[in-house]
Length: 319
Image (tube, rainbow, N blue to C red; front, top):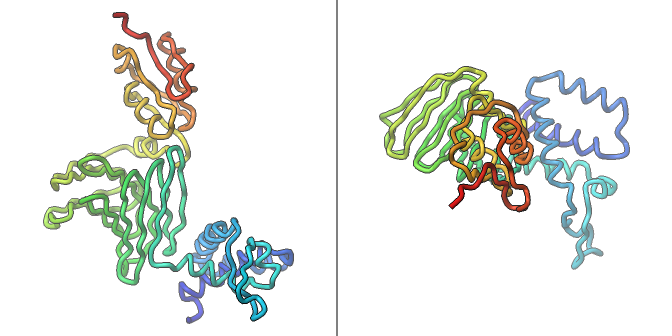
């Protein structure tokens, strides 16, 4: 391993993180870390990835026997207990193994949004009820979206293209930022930085390039639709990264469907007369009740909060 190689940088970052959680961390070591972070723009990203990996060791884990006297027994230790045993270097190697693993799976529950640092320096923000598979090797960086949506801030590496697959849809980027949302029959793509290339698997001859501020839909039948969008519109559509639903002239039924992605307690519009009413505003993804109350204040329609599994909006039609 040569000095300054990605593996060396990740190993050093992991060692710093392991030591930071120990009792011997000092102002001098803090200054040493700050100097190291300033030496190379790759170092801060490596430290972030190491911190994320270190948090996976927060729960107790099973350690191998430490000596012949321990054969046949195991020990359950946590991060601090591991360090107390003088094993910071071993902890760093464990973190390094997590950072440099060839493949990983990530999933979110309903209402959960995760921000994951990837081993190549990229960042993945994973939306509610989503699952992705990540496989990074020396030739190509591959991500598969099995369901849901994710936004990627891709680290620049021209020698290793970054390709996202969602069903038949393929999105290729090098040093850019974009989101992919898998839908029935295809996938939506929003580009926030740089440029991406879109196509459908099996139709490689039909490719479209999208630049920042554009959105596209690639259908499973290889049809591609694209359109320009203002930066503010893109930001609104990606407000979920900050736990928000940002409405700007959205129909009530569309807004309700968006909230229902993030909550087990579902919004139900019982009066279809109001379904097309338009709404503006920024709301927390986890606050469907607050949105329902805003609707009743705006339209003067009742809401029913009596059912813990649903919130009814509007007046029921009398039979």
